Image (cartoon, rainbow, N blue to C red; front, side, top):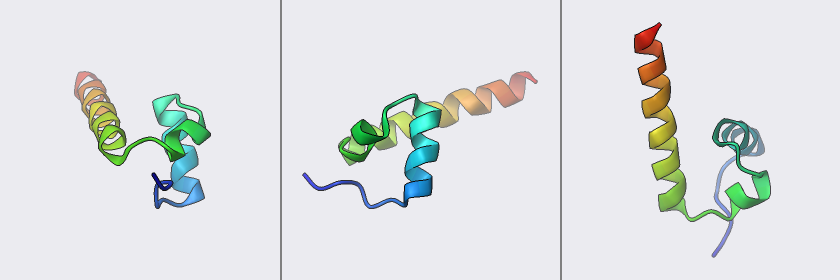
Amino acid sequence: MRPLQISAETALRLSKALNVPIEQLMHMPQHILIQKMLELEKTSSTDEKEN
């Protein structure tokens, strides 16, 4: 499996947002990463609606 094709800046932001080590993030299967990003977006949009 090859590493994700994302920039270093994007990898750092995702790593911090998902609370996952960057090494683990870079070797995470793409479908799992997309699922986690959708969950993150869902929780952030819920938080915005509450405020």
